[in-house]
Image 1 (cartoon, rainbow, N blue to C red):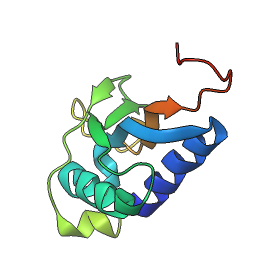
Image 2: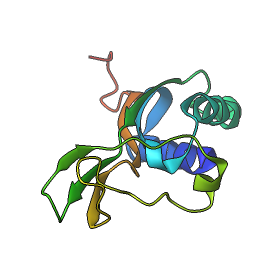
Image 3: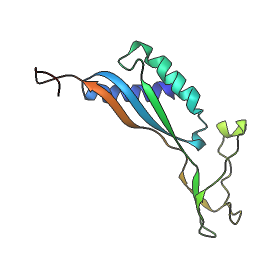
Image 4: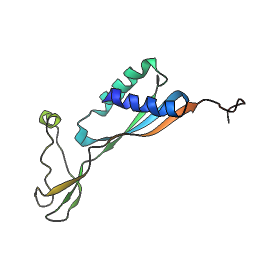
Amino acid sequence: MAKTILDTILEAAAQHRARRVIAAKLRVGKLTMLNPEQLVFWVRTFAEDSIARNIEIEVEEVEARVRCGACGYEGPIVVGEDPFYHVMLPLLTCPRCGGVDTKLLGGKELEVKNLEIDVENLGGGKPA
């Protein structure tokens, strides 16, 4: 996942003719079961020989949220730490009524939300 995130960052930077990637903000859902600290470590490790070396990374964790078809509840759910969840998502039950007629609204996000880059000066003069 970290390599894929870095590839996404570098591709976006190349599209904008970046000389350097300064910072990135990531959105990581709790149901991805990714450890934010480990993710940052590996993205920065893979970035060492690229224009993203020394990148600053901020991670916004996204809580798991559901909508219950039985009682109408819409809001967060608690997902405990269980190694089994790395293989299969937990059964998402409604915290209000205990029903299983739930629709996942959030918590599986994994995206690069913002990038800060240093771009080439294409005008030939001093940078703005």
